[in-house]
Length: 293
Image 1: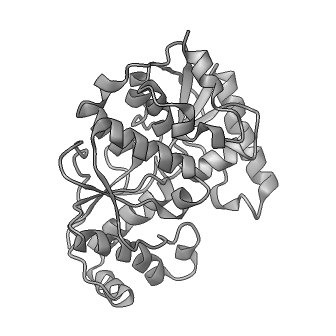
Image 2: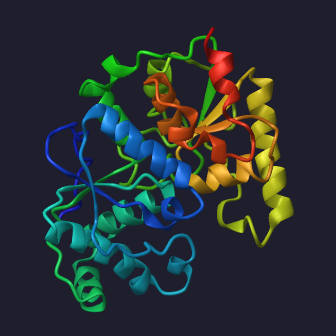
């Protein structure tokens, strides 16, 4: 099995796009789920949730059993393929890393594909493509979403925060410089915001240590937000539920932290409630007043 290349961006209205919400979007990151679905409706893209999807195993499964950690995302991908879904959107950065990373690992080790198929109890031909939140939104913009952004947010200064999983991973984040990624910048500008240079775009927020080493994570998140403020930003834009949790909840009140899909949704004229902004710990609704007359 040859490792799949990075797919072209999905086109709105060009058939169903498989949707893998994962545990985060079904639980603690409901606002990401709301904003992704709302933005897709605006763009005319059809999202079809994978029937009977399971947890991808992020973030700890790979440290316990490699084959089982591959079998979990393998099963979700096999289900998508069996349901006729050629492209799968995984908005959660961790889920994207596990699903896309599984495709890469299967391509490197044919024996792994056989073991994963036995564990999952499903065949998989590897015909499914996996896209991140950045790839999905950039694809929608290229396909006409930009024309629906009738309520831009001029005057707001934003910094894009990629963290670890949207900037790193050999064969996973293709076409991106791991030290200086740029996939969010065009979308942020399309929403009417200025994109500021800063130093912490790819620094780790502490990820899976949020519960076990909370103090360390608070220090890391504090450093990220301090640099954003020093750069002159009004808000931080993210694409990862864990990064959002660590910056929004662990450092509540410091600065609005918005998902990329929420920012684009506001620019499309969707209400803060429809996008889940009222679910944030740090009031993100202030960006509406700050970005518009």
